[in-house]
Image (cartoon, rainbow, N blue to C red; front, side):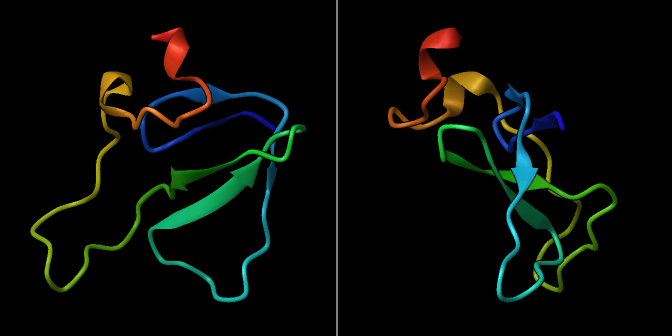
Amino acid sequence: MDFVDVFNVKHENCKIVETQNEFNRIFIIENEQGERFTCLKENAPIGKKFGGHWKHANPQDSPEAHPFRNRF
């Protein structure tokens, strides 16, 4: 399946990683190389301490260690 991570980077051929606890706003994906990325759930509930929904960041704001950093 194809997903978009929190830095708005598209990942192809990934699977959702089953986690011990279900998260309300995010989920984890893993590609064929075993690299994991965090993705936002659609219509994630607004948290008590937040005034709005989470949004995707810009790819340029991703950390240096992001495996696809050299693409943008």
